[in-house]
Length: 386
Image 1 (spheres, rainbow, N blue to C red):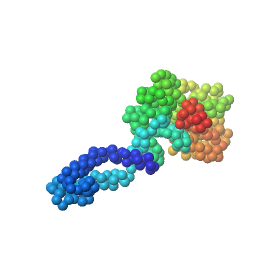
Image 2 (image 1 turned 180 degrees about the vertical axis):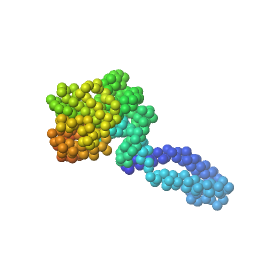
Image 3 (image 1 turned 90 degrees about the vertical axis):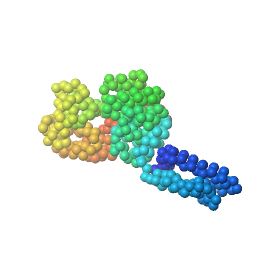
Image 4 (image 1 turned 135 degrees about the vertical axis):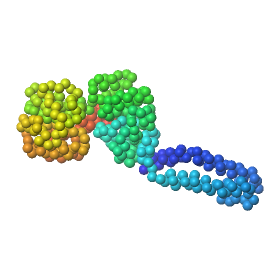
């Protein structure tokens, strides 16, 4: 816990004990005035000693004796009790992180803790840029909280949480959520609270992006899957043969759809959650609602001898083991197939390359693209722009 955190905790505790300390001070003042009036033969220093009961005049009346009994009790309960019971207790990191966020000025507010948000925050920490995060899952940001970074735990659509993140004094906001409702509500509320900050919103649908870009919101809206497709387009260009795409999100669907638009190509989309996709399905695109982690799962739907490309696009880090296993088996049994694996940790590249597969990252691509469009004073602007 750093010095700033310590001062914030002390400030918070003092604020909580305000009434107790006011009562404590008034009781002392009454005692001081009593001894000042009833013991005129003593000097000011001695009167102060009487008021804190270090010494009591032998001829003190009933109130003086009562004061001498009550004062040590109040001193122990309120003052020493406050110090021992509050200042030295184990601090609440969640409360501390929230207080830290409320003290930020001219900072970036990041809404939603996903892979793109991780890259933004890592860049801010590395370059000592001011930021705070709003995330409703305490477990997801436990490491950030314990490290003493400014985090507000709660629903970002609630005005109180936006105020705690001090959106009013933020210079920019990054909304990185998969929920369109949250993105729109947050954009509306943020723009009312801060008409001047720059808002960057992740959104998939074109009509949502258009709405966010129009006044009064004037947000920069982007799709990470569209940006990621820049590399994918090169990989599928002028290719032939059957393709397999495995995953659940917009990028997965976009890859499958684009391949299906190529002449004489069949695409098998393995998505175990969705019944359909956002694009118009054609006869070359086949949707299989199965969780495909073994070769047998794929063989049940397609002849792997005819397959030329496989895109493994799972985005859950817990499923990376399945990605490695499936990649290794494809490389062993069907070395003619090009395999592309989505990753989020750059350190995993070497593992995938062992099996002659290519890697790609939507968050890495999106972060680089964002750096190109943000304002020069942005917390993620490249150093050479500042």
